[in-house]
Length: 213
Image 1: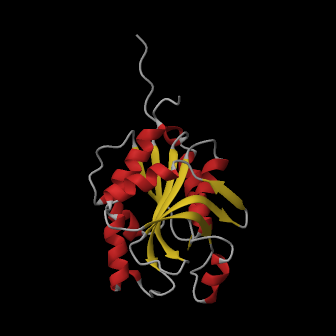
Image 2: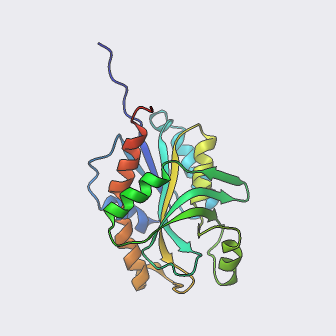
């Protein structure tokens, strides 16, 4: 009798210590396979290097990759604590389509009831975006921006074919610009939402393991 293959691992990548702390506050049970929560460090260069290094390890070589953490909303009407599920991530080096967007939206609504979930392109930047830059990025069709998601997913797919996704929590928006995450109400709200999203990530991961019809 042949042994069942080991379930594919899940790599969840975030940039900041506070993001990693929020994700680790949750019970780790319920995932479809082994889970690694990676703190990449800030910025696209750090994210790309960290993800490439970790995916070179034999245990994680075929891992599904999900980028998460905080982001800046670009569209009017967004609020701290809203969720962004990327349909694709993009930066000057190109775009990466995301997998399982509809399922993530459904599971996030269940995991964090009452929170608005936005879908659309998530763009990358190498610096914190302020003022008129938001309008310029919104004009490209992007709905949110962060510094690591695009680099994370690009590095992931360059390391080998795999499912990828990005889910971000809005920490500031055009009408709600923040200066420091940890001392402002919007940052606290975003932290609480991020602390609640793991069940949705696990359901996304489990869905990838089901046989395709």
